[in-house]
Every structure is written in structure tokens, then in C-alpha cells.
Length: 375
Image (cartoon, rainbow, N blue to C red):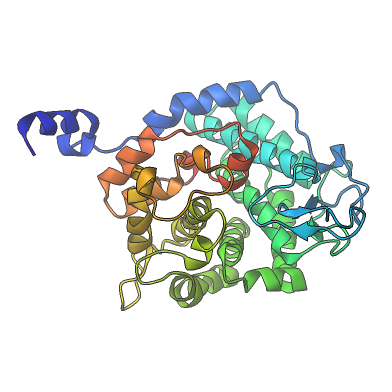
């Protein structure tokens, strides 16, 4: 490297100057700007909308399979699948309300963590109470009617992936336990009941055993909900699952996830599953776990990093939808950069967009407040 290139690199890389990365300083303005806006917005829960296609009641979360469409040969009959192509006619209001909740409530909690100002905590708690406690607006702690398919299923186990947006909510709730405004017992009870449903109902068991991103996301949810509710037995189970199933059965020798590469959106799904498994590693402190053949988090992130750095090098066909919207400021880069001492990951994380207004991105980008996750 010539001197001019080194000087240029020095200007953007604080680690070469011997400086530590200050995440709080980097995120503070973004968090406070957003949280201040959210103070003016009231909670909205699933009781604000209902679909006549739902087999559940007012307090039951309902969603429909994204890639299922009316059959042109039988318009009133059972839907047919078009993988990777989202049907805009599906009912998505409950999912949008949950995503809104998962955007606003953690931002408010992060603002309280930064400032200690109770107005942020109080408003975050209003969201938690509306979703999990208040009789008129609460959501029942199950997903019996998620990812339904007209004419085929009133709900499916894969619908459990819809509650990935509660993972950062649970993390934010744990942070808020230090505030004067939050009494956590009833919220923890909701998560304990939902975790019990996830681990005992046939839908939950089927999702747990899925061999693609769904199985990874099940463990991510279970691990964080167990952390919030102090369920040591489930935490230990998730550690074992990571070591004996997720890494050896989902990841190949080069660090890729072949079931995601086989989809019609291989780039987006590869980012998604890696975000999910790095969240598991962060929750359970498993960054240093490796199999004898070297498979582990370091190899998984190293595989995808070059294609986040330069998407033009991606060896697969472009995703059938939303290819231009990725990558974002994926927490996989931040968590791996810190845990594995990889400053190049952190430099890239800083350069990527932190927020998006595209529903599909919001749906698949589920950790947005890293200050809640990093000490």
C-alpha cells in the first residue's frame, strides 16, 4: 500500500489510529431524533384491524403466506405458490402494526438508556402495556393463525417467524427494567406464556425443526425470550441446539447456508439467516464456538462479507424482488466486528444505511437498535 492510500485509510479507520469504536456516540443522534418523533405517536396493536379471512378472534395475530396467490384457473379456489413473489393483496395489517411496535418501542428504550429521561421510558411502557397487558388491546400469546393460506390452512407453524420482531422488543424490555416507569412482571409473563406455546404446540415444534432460516429464527426467539424470563433450562437447550444443529446442519464448509442460496432471493435470504444466527451467537455468547472442521460464526461472516462490501461480486442471480434494497447496516457486521476484532466489518457497518421505509426491508431487518445489544 502506498503512502497516499494509507493516509486515506487512516482517515476513515479509527482502529489504525488506536481508537476504540464508540457505538453510543455513533448512534446517539439517530436514536434521539427517532425517539423524539415517536413520543408523539400512540400505540397501535392488532385489535385495530381484522381480516374476514382470519379464523381467529380480535386478539389473535393473523397473517397470510407471502408467496401465495389466487389461482388464475380457479380464482375462488385455494391459493397457489409463487416463491419469492409477494402477493400485495394479502392481509398484512397485523404484521405492519407489530413492525411499527418493534421500530418505535426499542428506539424509545434506547433513548432512555442514553439520557435517563423518563419520558422515553414511560412511552415505551405504554406500547408494552397495550400489546401485552391491557385487556382491550393485548395480543394473545400464540400464533395459531399466522401465515394462513386461503383454501388450505388457517395457520401454519412457519408463521412463528412473524414474531422475530418481538426479539428486540424483549431486549428493550430487559433494558427498561432499570427505569422507574416499568414494572416488568406482567410483560415477562406474556413472553413466558408465548415461549411455552412455541415449545409445546405442534406449530412450534415443526418450526423448531425446520432446516432453513425458520429453524434458526425459532432458536433466536427462544433464546431471547428465555433470557428475558430467566428460563435457564431453555437457554441451555438453545446453546446445545446452536452447537449440534444450527452450525453443523445449516452451514456448509465455506460458511454459506445452502438452503437460502437455493431460493429465488438468495442474496436477501443469505443476509437474513446470517443476521439471525449472529443474533443467536450474541444472545448466547457463542462467537468463539467452532466445529473441528472450522465451521462457526467467523467463517459464516467471512463468507458473506465480500458480497456485502461489493454486491456486484455476488455469484448467484439477482433476487427476483428487492435486490436493490440490500444491504443495510446489518448487525451481523457490528456484532462480528466487535466479537472477532474485525475493524473492516465495523467500517463497512458504519457506511451502510441504518433505516428504510420499504416494508420488505423492515420485515427482514429486525435488529435496529444495537446499543441495546452491546455493552
